[in-house]
Image (tube, rainbow over all chains, first blue to last red; front, side, top):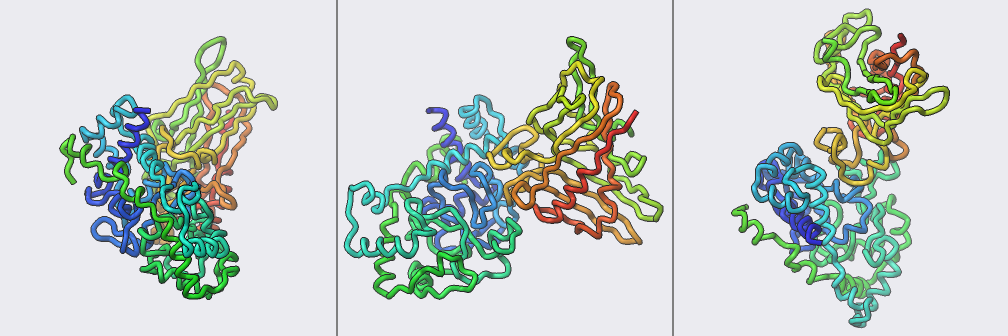
Length: 301
Length: 228
């Protein structure tokens, strides 16, 4: 158990450490802040090294143990491998793997942390990736009001209950309980831009063009803006999009089954979605920047 | 020069219980001539020339057969071969029936299970540059070089991989071998790989797609055992 905990703490140290980027300015947490459900609030798309701008919204990170694919296009098939994408992407951390490992190997803190987990201080790709994954796995969000209601510990208000019933009719096919995603890819009826074909870029299958991974709705209150490119700034924009039920022709079948929603229905649905906010999760200290650890080794960022 | 060309993979058996030593050598060739690394050499009867800077590939499930029976197998261990690398990689082979072997087989690429089971070490460590970080999956083989044709230079970069349908690029190779001495030399006929390539694939293939499949099919045919 102690080894497991050490591994999580090593992963946490790596997650918050800009040492993973080429010039040690960008960390995973730069775009995945714990205070907003590990996304980049109020930023349409990721900001990377040298003020470079990415093309997609940083997804919220939670309940990843139940995720089969990662990234908006599902390009990554295992949580271990996920950090390689931002570390090496020119618009994100723009780093080379051998250089990352050499920097970590040269660090007294990391030599000790790796030694505590793996029995020796050797820094390898596999060890680094598995440690980050060990930390990410701990990001479980299950303490929202919705969860309390499901456990029989609380009750929805009348408005929340109406919203919940509406949710089950309109949204649950894709944003399936309890993860509030079915883990699949869909076209939710927004216009596809020519610089991003989503899932189709990965599979090479024409019919996958414009499909993006269905995001979880948990903690949606914290994770604005919305959509794969952050084009919708407010939750009310999202409600309006779905409420009008007027979608692009390539929208997935589930979208075409949706019915228009009146203003009061959209408000009810919003009230329900706010019950998915897990403040205990977003303010969980064990997920936050490890001040004490860095301080112990004299590491400053 | 030959030392630089002969390969990284050696199969050898321990001298125990009458077992015989042998090694497996991979030699890149253009028709009958070995290919030097990073040096332009003439191709065909034209004034065209080619320079190869890198040829690396994964290999696994190596088997030696004798009259339909597998007499030695490497298992699922993967080997990363760089045909221009100086230091040979070695694996141990233990069979007393080496002299009777009539076929050798192997698989080029990375087993699909290993493509979906997270981080691995050794030759499967992504640090070797054979893993697509932007899209999960190993590059099964890499060919990089430059062709000079009619005064035009074309950089060729083929990174061939893919494990999901419809773009699987693993390929099995099975070759007849003659008399086995202390080595089995497997030639890689680059002339087959490059033959009229412009008519089937672009100069850059960097992701799992139809071109990668075509190249995988063609690479599969490039292996040939030198008969004694």
